Image (cartoon, rainbow, N blue to C red; front, side, top):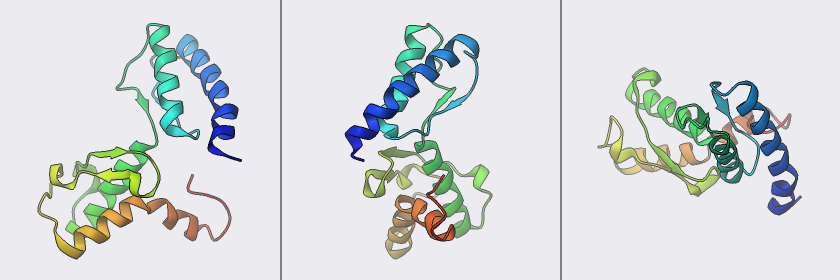
Length: 140
């Protein structure tokens, strides 16, 4: 299945689910994990806007997962509580399109090989899950 096929299949499903959520649970926290996430989150936002119930603090995409992973990985290095780490992650949700803004984190001075390994782990953290599942599925 191509990304276009994936979009064509999932976009209308996400749209219809967003319409139902906007109507029946407009104050719910909503996490969109349907691929391609970079397209389905904006679809949901636009549906909520059209219904007059959009709240950007209640709509999440998988980038939130990248932020949680980044916080956990930094906490492992620094010996801190992941809940106290603040890491902005921008970009897409696959490999090198995931861009952790470490310079804006609680630990902006992570440098050299430690930094390079950390960035790689954040970008490819989903692969760790896939390997841990030993062929029993993807990073869900």
